[in-house]
Image (cartoon, rainbow, N blue to C red; front, side, top):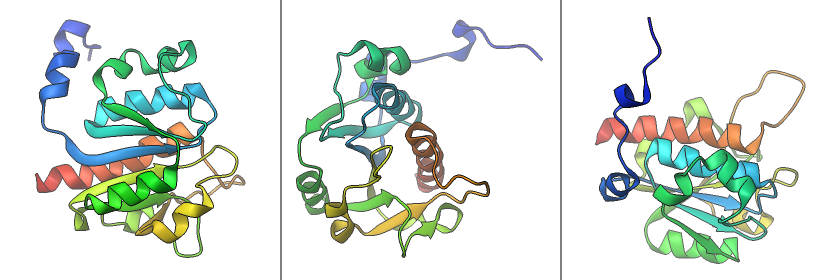
Length: 178
């Protein structure tokens, strides 16, 4: 076994990335306070070929040194947009045919391993603030809430970790039907 070099990885250019067909998923960051988490979301969106990343509320936008540090150039490849009001964005996305899915612990959340992403044509996945979670105004607008099972003493994961876990599962299920 050997590690692959950058040349052997066969990475595409940002221009090629922008032209390729995307997985029908958008990611929405709802009031994320850490710019490192924002940068990580850019990088994860690039890795999983999502349509777009929306930054809402207090979520920082590029260019920012702290975002660039974790994004490693993904701010140049991932299509993104800032929207001040997350509830207005949710309404717009719902009107455009996206299922509004929250990554949140609720009284009706469905455990990730039981969630069927493939039942939807297009998905808008919302992740919330590191302390307060999803904005309350999103709850009545959502189609479902997804919870990541946890078995330790903590009841939450870092936003970037949770985003990666849920996005991978969504993309894995949706890529199968493509």
